Length: 253
Image (cartoon, rainbow, N blue to C red; front, top):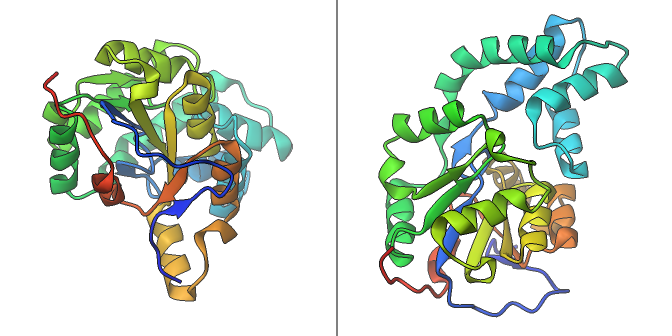
């Protein structure tokens, strides 16, 4: 099977004149398998609860799982251990201080630079991360100059609510219909569609590698099925390079 962009058969796929790009961070810009995803597992383990990576992925596919602190507490509760959210958060963040250094950047820097240039600098990050964690990643990888705005946990209701996408569009002075939002979960897609943006899903690097090795269609993955069902116009390969083929309005910010 050829791993080109997977189009949604239930959606028309026009190439609009795109004026702005909205990017989720985790799973889109940042590889977080060894940080945020691992922190969910290790936080639960600290309280005697066993959670697997596959179980975390299954929860993400279900949706309403944008806040990893809340998700960790929920998964622990379902396994018979009840802890206050503040305590779970403190344990999680203590682990993340070390594990954040294991994060890597998924797209090549040249792809980020090219997309930034194509929209005249109108790029925003729309993430469920706390602002300090978002800023730390951008600074660590030298990406601040390519991001005009960030919308983080502190800025209001999280995805799948449309507020994060709408707020990012206001920061960029763009109508949502002139933007594309790229995410790796149904929550990202639902938020974008509800706000009026074009929603595009992306595969996680590990998922893409497994599909390539097994020569399996991307839409065999539950997360891909969920993103398409939520309204994604397409699902692209990791790294954002597939976005370079779209049509952009490159007027300066």
